Amino acid sequence: MARVVVDVMLKPEILDPQGRAIVGAFGRLGVHGVADVRQGKRFEITLDGEPTDEVLADLHRMAEELLSNPVIESYALRVEQ
Amino acid sequence: MRIGVVTFPGSLDDRDAARAVRLAGGDAVSLWHGDDDLKSVDAVVIPGGFSYGDYLRCGAIAKFAPVMTRLIPAAQAGLPVLGICNGFQILCESHLLPGALTRNDHLHFVCRDQRLRMERTDTFWTNSYAADEEIVIPLKNGEGGYVADEGTLDRLEGDGLVIARYLEVNPNGSRRDIAGISNPTGTIVGLMPHPEHAVEDLTGPTTDGLGFFTSAVRSLVKS
Image 1 (tube, rainbow over the protein chains, first blue to last red):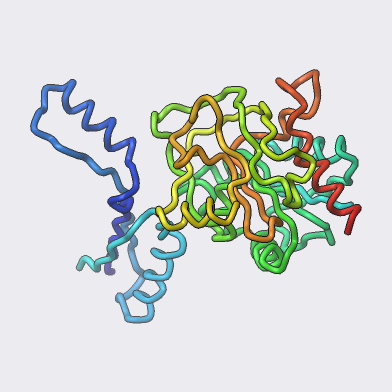
Image 2 (tube, chains in turn cyan, green):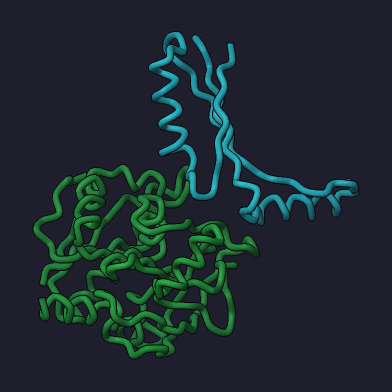
């Protein structure tokens, strides 16, 4: 069984208030030297069979239409063996 | 004058929206998320709440509901639709309106009576208001920050598609204080604050919200 991982991140120009709050928490916890944190989502998709071109095309479509909102987010898809 | 109100699992404000429709003189028709049937309505309100638990992103799952597979092409063909709060998020996720709603910049859920300026008053949903009229209606959201790229924001402002703007306080970090927008023909309107909660003296801070619903009834009478 193959696993496909989709990472979804806010586009760089979109403010990430959650990431900013995490930077603040780092400082309060004594961790300094952190310039920025961006928070995203990771989807781990386990396939029944092999990651054929057809399956991957479907998953790219899902990443574009469902898992991410292309207005504010970008995604990266990779197959993990 | 049949105005549909969609109920998704997790919708909160469908009852208030239906009540507002009735107070404005329209017939409120319940539309169920699982039915691919618009029941011959003349217009649709997508109410606020947390459709599908806000899983994934607000409105991301709702846009694929059976009722939306009928509503999206109907809206593209001219059926008037008002999306309030989660409804606005669903309209953006469905690409019926540009941009997106993101987490409030201060990260807190906000619930307050919000002053707005009505900036476009020739749409199906806003024609009962006077130009630049100031209204106060409730606002309650955690992910109400309106964002779009600069080109889209410039186009919205240049084409007069910002229907309402926040006054006094920007409650959620929305770009350019945008509270609501419309499509170019004024049939599709998205609004983050809640006019349906400001239609009766007993329960609302004002009755300023009723105008959205009387606008719709008036538009339907005229047509």
